[in-house]
Length: 241
Image 1 (tube, helix red, strand yellow):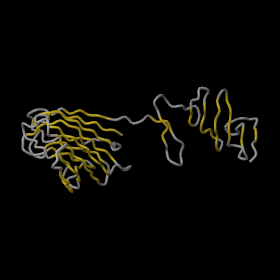
Image 2 (tube, rainbow, N blue to C red):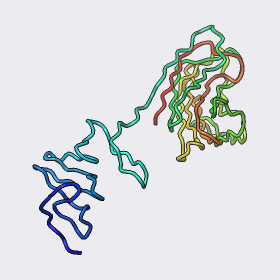
Image 3 (spheres, rainbow, N blue to C red):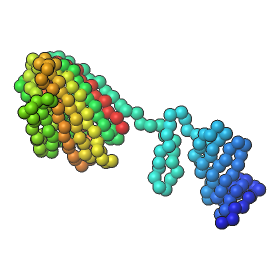
Image 4 (cartoon, rainbow, N blue to C red):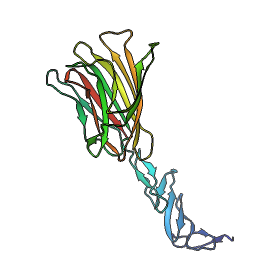
C-alpha cells in the first residue's frame, strides 16, 4: 500500500495517509494524532500525555476503561473500596448485625470483630444474600480447630456458615472473616474465617472455609449468634470493588 503525504494535514485529511485519505496521522506543534474515518481518535502531546478523541488527557489517578468492542475507551476514576463500622452495644439485645446496602459491584468483603460474645449457648454464623433477602440454605464448608489432631467436620447444605465454638456469655472471640467472589457475575462466593477464643487462649483457634452460590448479586450480609443476642464486642465491615 502506498503512503501519501497530504499537505492539508487536518483531521479529515491527515498529513500521512494510505489509500483511505481520511485515515492516518496528522501533526501539530509537538504533538501527533491518529485519525480514522475523518475523526481524531488518539493524541500524543508534547509531554507524552495520551489523549482520547483529542486533548482529553484525563486527570491524575484516572485509568483507561474499556467501553466494549464497539466504542473507544474512556478515562475513569477507579472505584474505591467502601467501609462501614458497627460497634455492638452491650445489653441491647442485638440478635445479629445486618448490612443490607452493599453495592452490587462489590467482590470482596472483610469483617473483623473483637471480644464478641453471645447471651445463649449457640454458635456465631455468617449469611449472605441477594435482592435484599438472606439465603438460608446451600452453605457448604469445613470447620475445625487449628492444630487439633482430631480434625474437623465437613458440612453441606447448611443454613449458614458457622463456627462451632460456643457463643455463650463467658466466651469472648476475636477474628476475621473474608468473603470473596470467584466469578465475574458475583454469584459464587467463598469464605475464609479465623476465630480466636480470647478467654481460653492457647488451644482454641477455629477456622472455617467454604462456598456458596446463588442466582443474583450479593447485596446483604449478616453476622451474629445462632441463638440469643450479642452481649459484648465490636464488629467492623469493609467491602471492595
